[in-house]
Amino acid sequence: GNSVTQMEGPVTLSEEAFLTINCTYTATGYPSLFWYVQYPGEGLQLLLKATKADDKGSNKGFEATYRKETTSFHLEKGSVQVSDSAVYFCAPGSSNTGKLIFGQGTTLQVKP
Amino acid sequence: GAGVSQSPSNKVTEKGKDVELRCDPISGHTALYWYRQSLGQGLEFLIYFQGNSAPDKSGLPSDRFSAERTGGSVSTLTIQRTQQEDSAVYLCASNLGPGQGNTGELFFGEGSRLTVL
Image 1 (cartoon, each protein chain N blue to C red):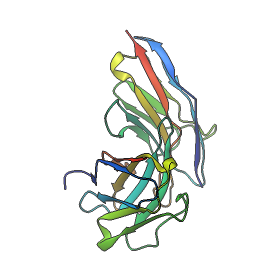
Image 2: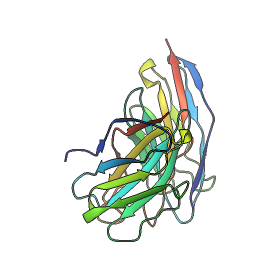
Image 3: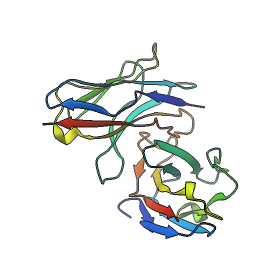
Image 4: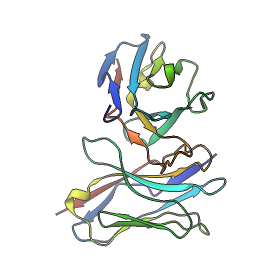
């Protein structure tokens, strides 16, 4: 089955700093790849996705590129804001069933 | 409904009691998932229903946990003889299932927070 490894948090950054949250996965076939975000006190929501190799998902200034050769889907943002403080989850989806397996989550704290 | 609905939103119970958590998925979604989020932990997959197929129960942590989905819609997660380590937020999610134009995105409910005293 699929599995995923995320960098451990918490990650603490100052506003406008560059963000990278690493994510690597193991999967059979060619999964779709997702980043979900959980803001304080809110439910999980989709941040971005990529469905095939070399695709780049992007949303709200965040980007992640599907790297099949390194089985990675690292999340990046050029300039973080306090409002980006949240828990971020990487998740590969089964190409057969669509089932998502989530990473441990990485807590991001952005200080003004 | 407009979104995934879960109830109760909060449940406090005594160790050894049984609890039932309910999930009402988005209308038309054939796939339904249960996950567990413990304090400071990631999302742990519990069980997955897809249409009329046999559910994927591979994530259920013990035989005290069971789930059913009646009529292909509402699902109930039951925890028997609850233990303190069962305390967590139980999340339900749904989507269109494989094929059918599914983008793979899961739509989550707000969760049911279970506290076992």
